[in-house]
Image (cartoon, rainbow, N blue to C red):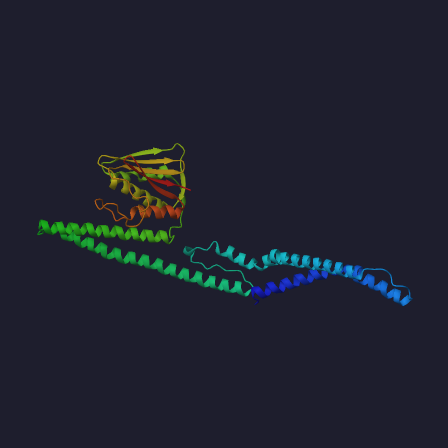
Amino acid sequence: MTSLLRKSMTQFILCIAVLFALAAPAFYYLTKNYYAEDMEDLIEAVKSGESLPAFDLEEDIVTGIMLQYILITVLLSVGVVLTMRVVSKNLWRPFEATLRSIEPFKLEQAKLIELPKTDIKEFAELNESLQRLMKKNIDSYQAQKEFTENASHELQTPIAIFQAKLELLMQQPELTAEQAEIIQDLFHMISRLSRLNRNLLLLAKIDNEQFDTRECIRLDTFIDNLLPLLESISGHLHIIRQYSPQPLYVQANSALLESMMSNLIVNAVRHCNENGKITICIGAGTLYISNTSDEPKLSGQHIFDRFYRPTQKKGGNGLGLAIVKAICDYHGWSVEYQYHEGIHSFIIRFV
């Protein structure tokens, strides 16, 4: 196996040697017409005993040397250019092949990519390092995936048991009002912990790109199918639908899309003022969800941060909008927050 430097130098020397071999007739012509010509005339005159002819040997030698210098410079320049453009391109072809090979690599596929073989030492070492790195990342990804799934399962079981025990306690006839209130508080806390566990697991799965199934979904029909659930969440609030005549189709994972819509509606309900309204608008490649509210404008810089809660007066665990942002990023969509005259709006742009 040869190093890149040694192979480059070898091919450069071979290129120069070939160029000089091809230029041999030019050197012969210069030698014959500038050096040898006057010397032949001088030798012939001496042999024949004739008087020496008039010639300028110094001028011919200087001219010949300069022409040879120019020729050598041109040959070296052409050799350098050929080495940089042609030879180097061939030498770096295995590196470019490696780049093309690793472009489709995805951790969630858990499959090592076969990198092209090469006889250049540096590129072979690069391929070996990449193989080790990909294998290490795949192992880490699998371990993280198993951990999140196992952790969620192990947490959900005691949470469910705890909820069942609390329900049994609530049914005891000898409970006092104070005890019932304490149990009710514990029930609310364990329900919140269960939702938090599910949301954290969902974020982990999105980050690990475990939702690889996508389908073409007509957005207005999808929302209409969710409307009974959304109206049950909204309670006494009025949901207004404004759909564009041109239907909007999106490539999305249906479970994630449902989660995104639910979190947006829950957020709108939670922060909407009494007897306010929630608007769902579908435009050209865009989804708007807005709600009326007496609350001031939220921080556009932190609103999608995990566990960001501008006020403690409302419920929630601060993960709803973070989930919305993660789902949009996963699908390649953009989401932004706007506020105008008491109306809070979230805009999803489907790219």
